[in-house]
Image (cartoon, rainbow, N blue to C red; front, side, top):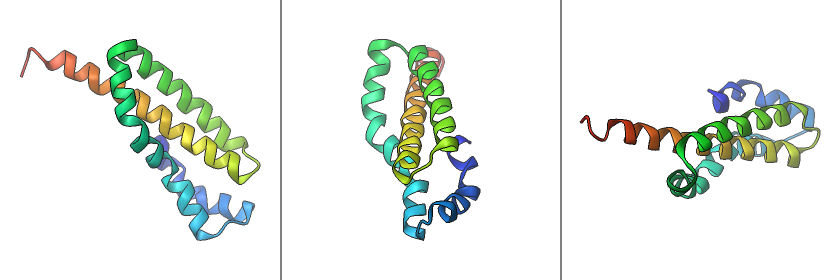
Length: 108
C-alpha cells in the first residue's frame, strides 16, 4: 500500500518540481529498484538479526521515508526518500516472509 498510495499524486509532484515524465517514472520505480537490490541481503540478515527486528525496523524506515517524501524540496531528496521506502519495504517483507516460513514449517 505504501508504494502505491503515492502514485496518483506523483505527477503533481512532477509539476511542482518541473519534472519530465521520465523523471516521474524514476520516482515511481525507485522503491522497486531498492527492493530488487536489497531482498537477498535482507533475507540473509533475517537469519542473523531476527525476523522481528527486520519487520519493525523496516516499518520505521517506511515511516521516515513517507515523511521524507512529504517534505522533500528537491528531486534528489525525493528520490532518496522513495529509495528508503523500498529499503524499508524490503526489510519488513524479508522479516515477515521468514517468520511465516518458520511458523508453517511444521504444519504443511
